[in-house]
Amino acid sequence: MTKVFIYPTNSLILSDLIERFGHTPLAMMGQVHEKITTIGIDSPPLNITPEDPKHGLKYAAVEVPAGVRGRMALVGPLIDEAEAAIIVDDAAISFGCMGCARTNELTKFLARDKGIPVLELTYPYSDAEGKEFVYKIGEFLKSLTKEELS
Amino acid sequence: MSKEEENEQVKVALVSCGSEFAGVQSELDSAAEQVNAKLVYPEMDISSLDTIEMEFGLQVASADLKLMMARAKAVVEGTANVDGVFVTSCFRCAEAAIVRNEVRRYIHKNSDIPVISYSFTERTTAATLLTRMEALTTIARRKHLLAREVQTGLTAGLDSGSTTTKAAIMRDNELIGEGWVPTINVIESARKAYDIALEQAGVKEEDIQAIGTTGYGRFLLGKHFKAQLVQEEITVNSKGAVYLANQQKGPATVIDIGGMDNKAISVEDGIPGMFTMGGICAGASGRFLDMTAKRLGVEITELGKLAVKGMQDKVEMNSYCIVFGIQSLVNSLAQGSTAQNVAAAACHSVVEQIFEQQLQEIEVKEPLILVGGSSLIEGVPKALGDLLKIDVIVPPHSQLIGAVGAALLASGYAEE
Image (cartoon, rainbow over all chains, first blue to last red; front, side, top):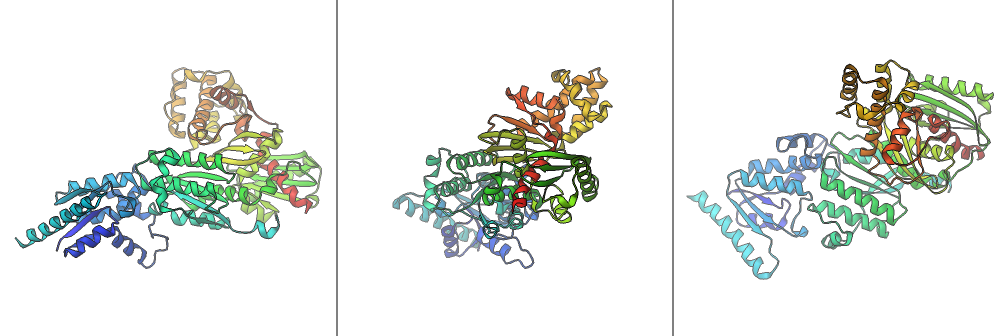
């Protein structure tokens, strides 16, 4: 079972596909769940406090806006943990979205730079492309299992 | 509008690109709550995110910036029923700064809903936002109060600023007493300024029908003097400025250079529209001029006279920082610059910062009214006029702008 980081980080479809192939998705939803269920913090809606952008300094310098560093405080640890990654470029907003283009650039760079297996795809806009899209993801996830077995 | 309506919660649309990720959301909510306002996310159709860039005319990479534009559209079209708008994005993000400014202009141009904008860091606190939020809700809630153009009865205004405390006594639309003392202890300084003003006016404190307080110490003074009106300085100063400059009808721009921060306010018929409030660096404030005067060994009142005789471009100033800026001036003096040139450079530096940091965010419409203690330093209005190439009006008693504005607005309560 491999820990697979996904981009867009909150894509339910990618997260579901990874689970179906027996791996562990590393997604934003888990991070947000952990944040909002942390007892003792009252900073709705996401329970992100001024401390989080400071934690984000591990991934981005102080001159990088607080919103980017706050997001990186959630995403960065997922990349640290990742053993593989699936990146979908130019996705429709409904497929998953981080909201901030600068965070997207940094997130994708860190995932590519980590030296783990990365599958990079373009978002499908037709049925044929959609089938090809799912097939490629399936093959990639199966190859992770084979690597584990070998 | 009844008192009950005045006390109703104001709904402020939050148009932001993700303040909840920057750790400042609770501070924004807290500032709103303190002025009985509630931040709401304007509802819009998710599909509008696919078309908003071409509709708005601005293509951006960040989805949350598309969301900002779509929410602004919902506000303008009335699908989001709100009383005011708070547009905010991360400090240091160029893409967000472009969208923030254009969204603010778009709402201002296409609706009469008051709007303010702010760029935040994770260090932004509710206290920093309070004055801005209070001004926004006042404009939304108390338009009838702001429509007042004539002072009636016998009223007083107290303006507790960061550097000086001012008092004004007004009777039947005339200023009859004034006091101006340095701020040391907020209440004691106000007491002193008030006593001076009462004595000059020749009236007793018990005869005063209503008091208004403004400035940093407004809450403390409001409680101590049992004021009828406790109001932030953006609303009060813009009212005081157009009143003293006799420019109550039509557009005007008010610039208030205070001891600690500056305000640039776009006014229409005496009611503030867009405004910005600087306060990150003291290098753009009256405090810088005060320090320059001390370094030159002259009274602050003499600095302006020196400045109008000087040429600022003969002095090299390579920092806006209050510490390094003063250092530049000291170096210039050491290299033989005249006190006149140094004074002119100091005035130019303050004005240039206001131009670069604040006037870019509001529409400068003539007449331009310069107020606050720094307006009395002749070099400052001259430098501002030279920079903007327009005539700058410094109204009589411009240093008393807050106190006069408070006395004027408080007279609404004297009538009651």
